[in-house]
Image (cartoon, rainbow, N blue to C red):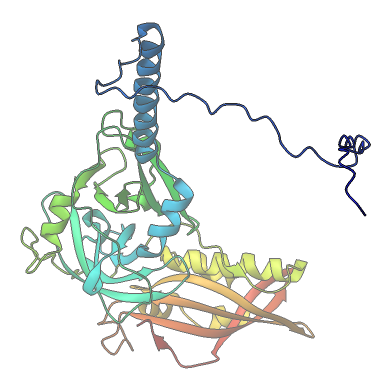
Length: 398
């Protein structure tokens, strides 16, 4: 084509529908202005006493309250927990003595030593200890102190843990308790109050609890209760007990043994444990065996004959009974079998007996475990003892 020399105006751009293409550019806001850097430290916030003072008071009260709660908790005694901790080391003391005072509580320490009340073992002929689970062991008397503490040494061994003597006295406001035995042989715990506000001992004791340990909230021994009677009872502190139980037992003097011909054990009524079904017949047997053992322990040999059948009373004289049992103390009976054949009732009974080592047939022992079968007959409507046969030979308690 030949250039004619005409120049056409450029065509306007084609219109693009809105929304089809995005703008090619966007308007951006300017970047934020940064604060000027200063070299001076910032000013502290305004002090507002009306907010700070209540906060300080709250913290002080909370802290003091928490401390009081901690102290109060440490001074409080959990009776069930203390009994569980210390109970296995607390034992019942039984003895045949010339004065017939042989029942108390004691506490088992290391090396087989046992502490108890000296009033229970005056002029002893034979001594034994019984655990809360019924284990029986003989014990020798090493001596007693001027403040009424007796030191025994157990013969044989026990699986029971030894008690721990406290290294120091608890705070004056700390609760204390005593663990001991009551007349039926059950182990109990009684509160003693605090050193600052003590509970009168006579209000929580019986004669069997003399010799019981006073304990702190952790079950440690902080003292031993001694005295000739409940009314005169006192607490010998742990510092003295550590001395008496130490090497050589300083402060302990030998206790003279009994030289009487006849000795007696505790005089409380004996109630045999019934391990068979509690039928009317078993209950009748329990009553008879209990009366037989109680009367024997009281050395009422005339009254004993009222419990014998006509045949036995004829063949066993009162003097023979006296010779056989003048130093005996029967305890811990368990009726483990009751049967009846015709008019004869058989009752198998296990129990322990303390006696003088010089008594007939003792062979130097002082405690045996017996297993006898009693043959009982009925006369005029009453069950009576007709004879006894050993099921097993006597076994030493240790």
